[in-house]
Image 1 (cartoon, helix red, strand yellow):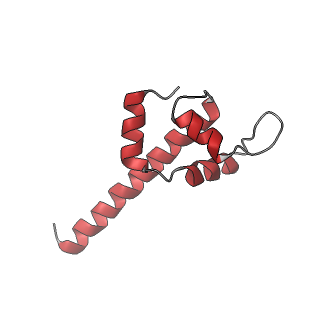
Image 2: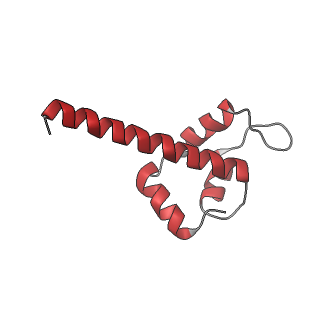
Length: 85
């Protein structure tokens, strides 16, 4: 379950438009609901907000967080290199 403090940190990096990224990761890992259908954006938001528990979706959110954090770091390094900082 994602707790309030974790949610704050996740939102800081992911922003408010994270569901598409999570859906992409779930699709990459071939993770579906019990009946074999892909999860919807509302389920992802419910897990993110602590209304539902789902370990697969939580792991996908964390994976998106890590990927996004790495992208931000890489972008900062490129900017610093270009600007000579």
